[in-house]
Image 1 (cartoon, rainbow, N blue to C red):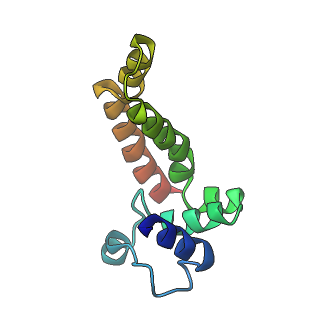
Image 2 (tube, rainbow, N blue to C red):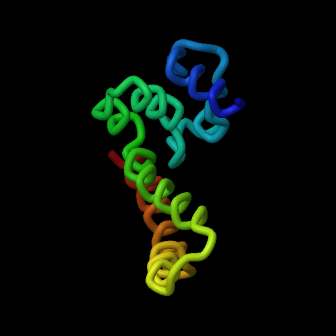
Length: 114
């Protein structure tokens, strides 16, 4: 129920024009973009089928959505096979976490240099 309300709000209200959505405290304090800046607007754009607009707002979020969905699929499998477990460890294990963390840091620095 709560998810439905959140989806409704993000689809029907643009975070750029609405006081319902919080502003980024990091950007407010520093003037710099954090890795999450633009995520609310990107979600709004995705829900309204404006993928290009979402990419312009936050490329990292758009690229992360399939990865997050895949994780949800893997974790919802009650008795995964050995192959599924192998892929789960490969895609979401310790090494993968380090890679994802590195990508986030590179994105964070890069989006403030451009």
